[in-house]
Image (cartoon, rainbow, N blue to C red):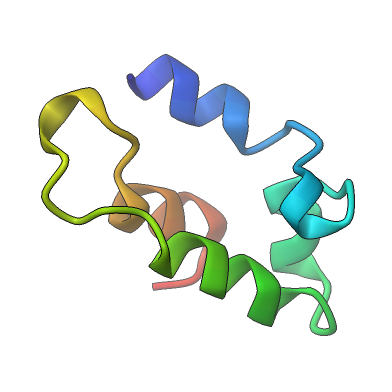
Length: 62
């Protein structure tokens, strides 16, 4: 899952209007959409799901 999370950070995401999470994190006008997306991730999905806290840390959104 860690490899998938690392790749996800640089994938075009439809919920971010086609931007990558890294691009959205760097753009103050898109950052709220990224935060909402990360907030929508389940917190109790276990070790087989992406971890929003790890993703926030990787994106500097802690």
